[in-house]
Image 1 (cartoon, each protein chain N blue to C red):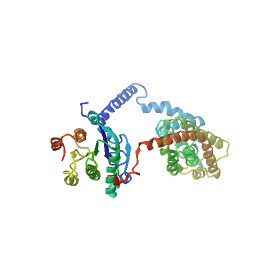
Image 2: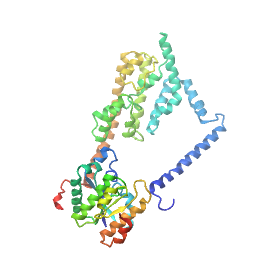
Image 3: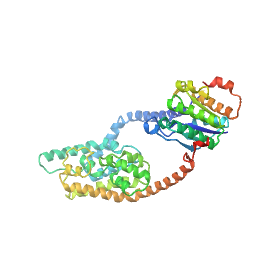
Image 4: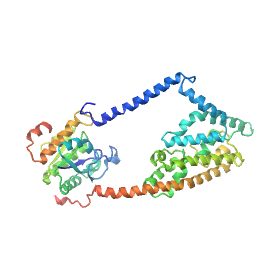
Length: 175
Length: 280
């Protein structure tokens, strides 16, 4: 099963919180980069494979919100993965918003399912998008239960890609 | 480790084992020293290394050992002079003091191998006399990695700071660069020694100038002779000649890496240039 990831500069391994990192423009790499190795054991268990990662600095995203969202969706359509995972966004506010918006756009404009993952600190984003996007619960940076939540993200990704019934699972792991 | 422990936590525990072994070994060494007449490692270093070196003191041989060891330590990533100075600094300083006393009384200066000789005539731009190397990196090298690093290192290099090169080029554990890195300071030391011995340059006056004083100025200030400044610049140019073939070899290797990296990157990158949002 082919997975496309959406990262910010930090999860892509291409920068930090400082300005230079945040200004990383929209881009992508074929194959796994950044935070993918952390997800790898769970992906393997569920027979999922990361075919590409799209990334964008949270500062750049803030300035070019609409353009980035649309281009990411168009790129997802071009790359034809089975599912798109936006995140994990932890408690990074800008990145969490990007995840929700991109997942929403992909779900709306393409037939590829997309999910997001973020921690409960992103109150505004969650309350605004939890009904239109499947947002998996996860801890904030440094919080407990990360490994478990990463598995749940991968599990939900598999189920939505296989078009299984997710109502029960959603109740348990999503906002 | 129990299941579910994240790899980063697991790795930090894994690092505890070698550090525990290191601590144990050195604890045993410490105890063993207590059974010897030296009583501890510091006294051992003093009596076995420092005392004999102080005895040979003011000689080219002792100076060559100093320069050689300083460069070799740098090659392994250890601040060479920080180590060698623990033994040599008292010697160099006392020779400087004797020179400055003689200078104040208008007597002829007794010593060549003073702290000023070490700071102003052995290396230029930091350990390994890398100011010559930086000049080449900026002027004749073509690979981006070396060029950029050269530009960054030029100003610190003028003031004798070269950590960017030591760890960035790198010099550390680099079999190509070790030869000139050891060779150039040795050459400087021997040529300077000849220049002082033959009376071409007046001895250093022992005035304690900061080691960061730039080349040219420093030679004049510690000897009072403009000839010393010119001599420093000649050594700098000779250093460039020695470093040239080695940095060119490294430059070629890096150029090769850079061109292969570029082609690899292109195939991996996903370009958004031809993405149209109308496709949706």
